[in-house]
Image: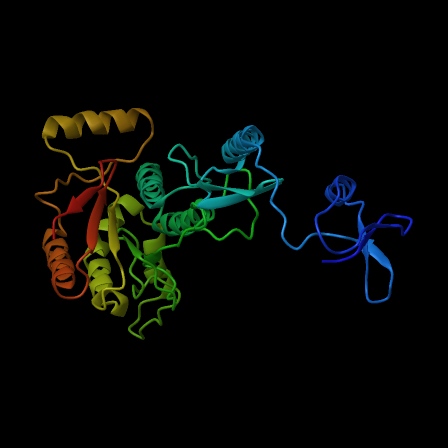
Length: 331
């Protein structure tokens, strides 16, 4: 055992036998010294020392205080956070609290179902304002850009944290639309828009058969609600021909048919009268039983069923008709 000294260098313990009361007191107060290799006095710390007894009441208080702080932080920042770790150092050690995502969290954006419903509702009402095919095309494109910026952050970031660089939930693939190498879980088919290879689109080379660009471009000026039905079959055919579709890379497919099915002549008359009074556009009289694209839609449903049975067992097909509740097709 080491020879111990006081602060002035006076020996208080000879290095053998029991400590005196004075030596024990000075060791506990860190007032006992030993000499190092350079014969300098340094504070003596016993190699084995009984740890100080834990103060249960103090630890409980520290734990309770940490819990309060964690709950307060969770209320302020835990709006959708997947997990946050709070640490606090105490005399007894480091206390750690883990905050998981709260069931009452309000997320900063739209989830997939909300985004789809927003697109369905706004498209339905816009087409009743007698907008043209061109305006419909522009509206859908701008709506997708807007909705993508409003989607729920993929990391569950809080409402208070809206940095522009925040990664949002995945976007969707759109048809008709600009081709992209990105493949997302959802494919949205806007069936009332001119297909990608339709002659009215500027990207499609005009045939030299006497038809002028003005004649082909006239489609852009037609009322979207009246022109839309002729586009449905080709859009569904192109959707089922996509490589991403055949490979089962889409888990959810949504088809938008922004007309309002009517079940009777009386309902049609009342609806037309209502819209006429408000300057809205008269829409064609279709029901689910006499849709002009019914055969095309059935073939598309069969194609989806085949993908589900052979490639993607969790595939879902959802049809958005007019202002009705979305209809999920049993594949």
